[in-house]
Image 1 (cartoon, helix red, strand yellow):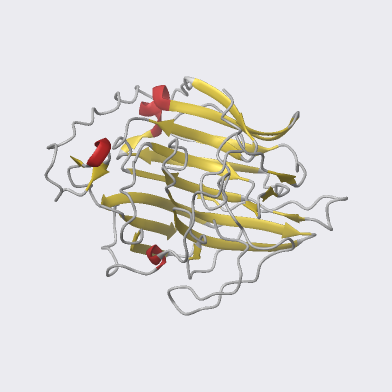
Image 2 (cartoon, rainbow, N blue to C red; image 1 turned 135 degrees about the vertical axis):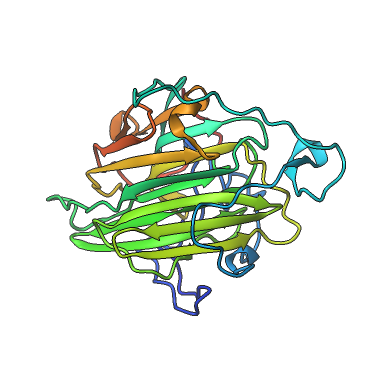
Length: 338
């Protein structure tokens, strides 16, 4: 996730913004505090710049996310390129059909996270090929007593952020940060496998903009990253790839999340974003409500303080801000609660 980052150039040659107080980002926590990327405990993940930050093809055609080619089995059952012959095709059973109407459904799991609020869907490798959602960029609310603190919030959708041991995370989203009323908004995408982090999307965004964002697996380590700003009328749609030699992505989880980002192992205070309504959430071209049995709902909790609360699952859901929390360092060996 971006913001803040050290000065560097994105694919357009534009300089990225400087980092906030405390230094560069160094990882992302899984629910419960376990790291999912470059700051994972034990330091087993390493690497330099992601070559996935470079464009790997021309603009994709405007329209819906591209269809996914048939998956085939690679080593150890990972979903791999259609060109890989061993093992033959993998049969991925479709999720149950969505129920009639707009009735909100209870998820089968409920948990708490140190820095995530939203829904996580889990399945066997190869289950999740795309995820997208619509939301409005929230307006931060500064409060007395926190004006000297840099508060952060990231709203995103992604694949593989919660697949145990995967070390992959393909995601796209927007940061909403506040320093005593000095607000900043930044769109970004990321293919994380222990590299240096997110890449800015070269389009302006502000509070009140309606965004439609999605991630779709195309083949191998290549994904389509899409953001449409329906308010301003622009579309970003590009292919991005993991570096050569990266193990195939497992495609075993999908996430729709509001996050309190972290840098150098410290989770920051959560921006008062009011609420975020995720609308028309689509997974594998089907409504979110059809995946209720695979879903876990996460509230963001700092000790005993509720920071963000997630509503019931339907074809969308709401996340409400409840508290700032405090800067806190990730603990190694933590696991998901729930």
